Image (cartoon, rainbow over all chains, first blue to last red; front, side, top):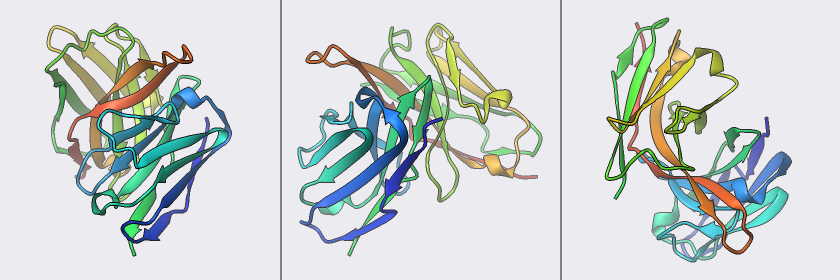
Length: 108
Length: 128
């Protein structure tokens, strides 16, 4: 089973700043199956990025994904107030899905 | 607009079986390439994939839960179901159903997957 480790655990930033979230896999992951979600308190997760770098429908272009192999990144270019939330990466391999433990982006 | 709604008892006793249903509206679950999945989230913790099922009943299950999981699909009702047996307090969580959608990247020709539509979730507490 591939383990995803997200860092940092918590990111304290101000609106307008750039956020860089990391997702590292215990072994190589197909970029086609690397996904990012956003979750706000009391809500279901929302799909942000699939295929490592493709934005889902309706996702603003301040969100971008990159990476390959074992290292992937989610970047939020300029944080808006509604972007403060928890972000999860996810991968699919060997017919199994696994999630990272999440990164919380909080207001500084 | 596709909508997913989880339903089931909010309270289950230890050692009993947890049974949940996900009803899909606004579209058909009989779409080739799509899977329907269950995910759970214990209070204050992260997301855990439980298992996936296609409209034809093909399943993929989490190894850590496989021995206790039964998943089924009813295409006539546009529903998927989850049974989790021998529950303990560690199974207390919000349970979500979602669509595992298959995308074709026309530039590379590769298929990609993601959980693109989620239900609102249902809280299940295991307690005597």
